[in-house]
Amino acid sequence: MNETLFSQIQRLFERTYAQVGINLEDCLIDGTRCAQLSVLAGKSARELSELARTFLRRAGDQLYVGIYYSRWLIEQLELHDPRAGLGDRNIRSLIMFVEELNHALHAALHFKRGIREIASEDFVRNLELQAQVDTYLVLLLFVAFFRKTQRVSATDRRWLRFHLFARQCPDGFRDANLRGRYLETSQLAASYTRYLDTLNGVRRLDELRRFHSLDYSGKKTRILALMDSAAD
Image (cartoon, rainbow, N blue to C red; front, side, top):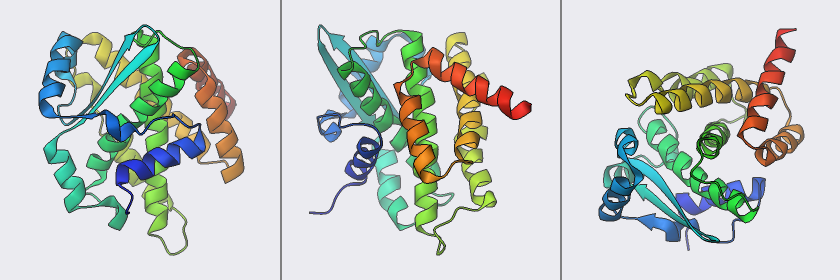
């Protein structure tokens, strides 16, 4: 049986970090359930994208996850399957697809490690920062796959960075907390991925696993230290 794009990306993340223990495709929800959960999520959630969302809820020692992709987003990925080539027609759709899956996976991994404060701002920023870092690396893999040399050029990297980082518009959020969240995490992710670009495959994997184990404060401290080191 052919693997879905979803299952392939989940497997990639699990090979990089750890087994989550469930098939996250079982957490997919429809538009009706998304609308219900969006109401429960509060006023600021109305500003988030209606094309893809991840919902987390804790009940005692249980974590409930809902992943929503709009019909339009799925149709775009089916029409322009990134496994057949990545370009301007499908890169934004792939970014949204990967980020939501990544949010769910890392939330589950953190929960398994005993982290329960899933409603805290630091927890949410941690997921957002990690997702942008991981999505950049997934995009690199897709680009490299279609290069005869299996190498990604500087032009390719600039193109990926434009779509993943430069095209973000945090100032468009009316909610000050959302503006701050997406501005800070995108800047940190852009800086950290430049550092990752300097590492070979083995060192990058070790660095990623150490980075993943850190909380948001630790990740931020790590990136700022790397920035200071690069400036010296």
